[in-house]
Length: 393
Image (tube, rainbow, N blue to C red):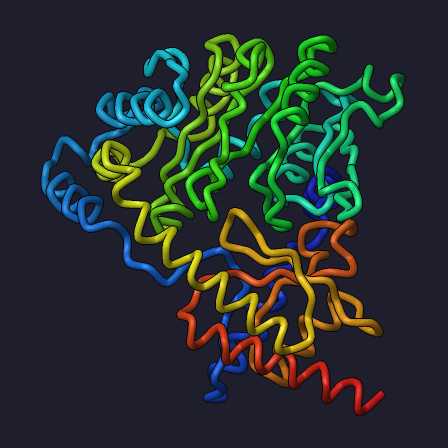
C-alpha cells in the first residue's frame, strides 16, 4: 500500500474546508448564504493594479521565469514603502524577498531554520500556516493560548526557561488574526529582548498593519531597537488591497535571515508571475492613498457590526484593527457545532474559533467582508438563531 508520509498525518484537518463544502451544497439548493468566514473582502482591486497587470501581461518578457530575484521594480517599491511607512531602510536586493503570498514564506520559514526536535512558539488560536510549517519541518509546536484576560498576547517570559532553551522560532501576528488584538509597544520591546538574548528568530506577521481605526497606528517590529538582530517581518497586498488571489507579498529583514529562506525557495518555486509583481509595484508606491477608502469602509462596517451585535445580545470587544471581530460564544454552544448549525439553519458562514486551534474554543470570528446591509442581515440571523436555540433548549 502506498501511504502518505507520517509527517502529513500529523497535520490536523483544515477546518474551513468543511464549511466551504456545506456552503456549496446550500447554494446549489438556492439558499441565500451570507459568508462572513474567510478574510476575503468584496472590494475590487485598486485600478492601478489592474491596469499595470494588463499592460505587463501583454509584454512577452513578463511571462518568463521570475525566479527568486523577481522584478527589481517590485523590490524597490516594497523597500520604499517600508521606509516611508515605518522609517526603516532595507536593501531591496539583499534584505527583501518576494513571496507567493505571505503564507508561502511563513510556512516555509521553519524548513529553512528549524531542525527536527527544535521547538517553535506560536499563538493558539493562530494562523494555521505557523503550525503546518512547524510540523512539516519536524519541529515541536509550543501552542500558547491567547486569552482575553492577558490581552491576547504571547508572553515569552511566562514560558519555563528550560522550554525556551529549545525554542528556535517564534511566530507573532499583531494586529492579530483571529482576535483583532493589538500589541503594546512595551510588549514588543520585551519580546525582542528575549529573542535577542536567547538567539530566537522572530517571525512577525504584519499583513493588517494598514487596516487600523480610531487613530491607532500599527508599528513594524523593526521600529523596536534590536529587532534587526532577530526578526523577519512579513507583508502582503492581500488584505489591505483586496488582492487575495494575486498572491503577492514580501518578507524583509537582515540578509542573514533572508538568505536561507531564499535558498530554500530556490528549490521549491520560481517566484511570482512578473506581471503581478509589476502590479504590486504600482500599488505600493501609492499604498497610503489607495488603502484609505478601503480602510474607511472597513471602519464603517465595523461600527455597523458592533451595533448589530449589541442588538443581537452578543458582546464583543470593539477592534482597533483588522477586518475581524472575535466574539464569545453564547452559553451552551461549542465552536464547531455553532458554526455548522448556524450555516445549515440560518445561512450564515462564520469561522469557529477552533478553526485556528483548540485555544479558540469558546469563540467565533466574523469578517467584515460584505456590505453593511448584508452584515446587519447576517448578524440579525445569528441573533435569531441563538434565540431559537435557547427556546429549543
